[in-house]
Amino acid sequence: MILRSKFQQPTTEEIEIVEALLKHEFPQDYKDFITIYKDGIHNKKIVKLGKEYEISNFISLENLIKANINAIDEWGYPRIGTMICNCPSAGHNAIFLDYNNQVVHIDQESNYKITKLANSFSEFVHNLKEWCLSVYGYNCIV
Image (cartoon, rainbow, N blue to C red; front, side, top):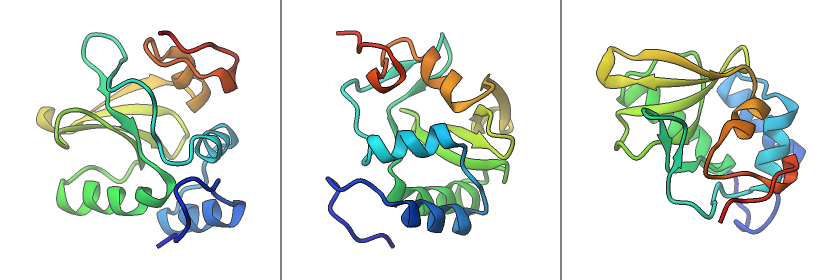
């Protein structure tokens, strides 16, 4: 468990520990994101990614391990990478950063159907229609 104030930025060492435990080396753009947006909080309740995909929040660094253990061991998600976003479906679908560092949606109720959303984490963030991040050069939509 990572013990620190939720207002402190994660350290490189903390990110490396989570990567080692999840057996997933994160791409630099994702590491930058979780360093800047420490606790996964954003100003929109739901981000729409088209008609079928919504996220309610990004999972914080300190919650990645527990969320991924739950996703795989309790909910039966495939071991294809790291769950990075919660969806407003109470665990019935999720957004993952796969081991090729592509962002995918997994739908539990459709036999764990995998749909690629973006070729990279940066592309995924760029494509968010409701939540644009100034760190990537975009102003938030109000």
